[in-house]
Length: 370
Image 1 (cartoon, rainbow, N blue to C red):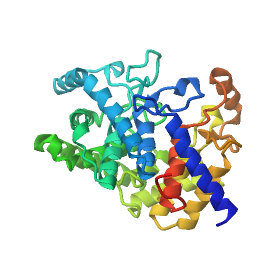
Image 2: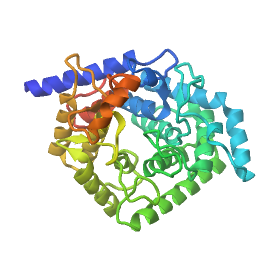
Image 3: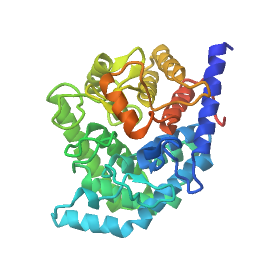
Image 4: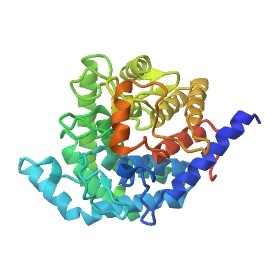
């Protein structure tokens, strides 16, 4: 076995260790233990982290996170019911009234201000739970009450503008958000514990989501950052891999990935979108690994391995993976302002470690449990 392969395997084991160390007794995964504004848990980040741990055979870790998600929803069941009633009555709902996306590790709402209205996490945790259940033959019954709340919530509000994966552009309906919601609702449609009525509601919403996204994409020939936009976002890769809203060879998805490769990929690193200025607009490791996962799913194994190698090359001497690399910045003049505001960019980022781990497992370089 080559030294390079041994290094990649060691980084995968270290990734599991970083994630274990970053999981609170509540089951929540901290986004980053060293970056002040990331010392919280997101449903979106955590769902990808739980999926990686599930793939690695860390069943208890993944299910502890699902339990944390379940607690978030069950504790807010009256709030969900109120939101659904207001939606049915046609009432205007303020952004601040919706469920949050970023929580304290113990499940409390964060008191600090944040771009909290994001819907994708409430679909992503359902997707991760469904994948975990199939992978390990585990019952979803312990999480059914919370899953029902999550399904009802996103099935009602999927077409409502909200912040995207990056906590930006709250006045739009985003393609990657819709893909996450779609994936969660598809998973839930197969759970008899939710009842036929709610499953039918989920099925109707997935049909409508697909129709909207496909019609919008057909108007320009590729999927867009948000409905009606002409831009792309690297998070759209997830519409096929891993969310399965589109087949990897669907012409719309193929055209989308091709445009992402042209505009957002630089020597293996992947930028979020063309006008990104956050910490100078660097290349995000989790997106580079996501592209590698998509390459692996489409049989481009050498290209997938190249993505894994690029991500691994960004590790610190201690093996920690940052949120992004500043090796190729889209807006270098903006980097220092962010450093002065919040300090250096997040490192380690558990989501980066999770996506690296997922790709390493996908390529068969490691096998769980690690």
